Amino acid sequence: MSESRQPFDEVGFIMEVESEGFDAQNDKHIAGVQEMIRTKLIWQLQGSWQRLATALINAGLVKP
Image 1 (tube, rainbow, N blue to C red):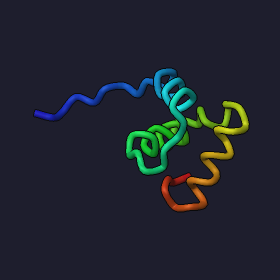
Image 2 (cartoon, helix red, strand yellow):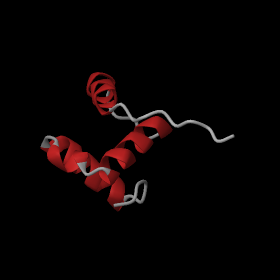
Image 3 (cartoon, helix red, strand yellow):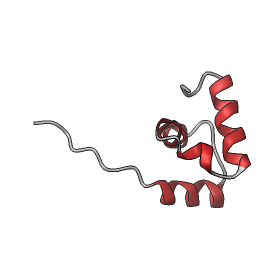
Image 4 (spheres, rainbow, N blue to C red):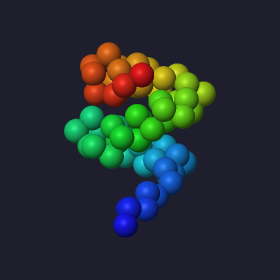
């Protein structure tokens, strides 16, 4: 039996990071940014999110 994957809650993730700040040591934060890169949502958000994604890509923490 395969494990059911919960859908990614983009709004909840964005609200969490906006209120608490981004933590590069938090695997959930890295995975959230990776998912938003995969869906291309991050490139439609304000510039700070795009700069964050670019920095994480350049650091090798996420894939483009």
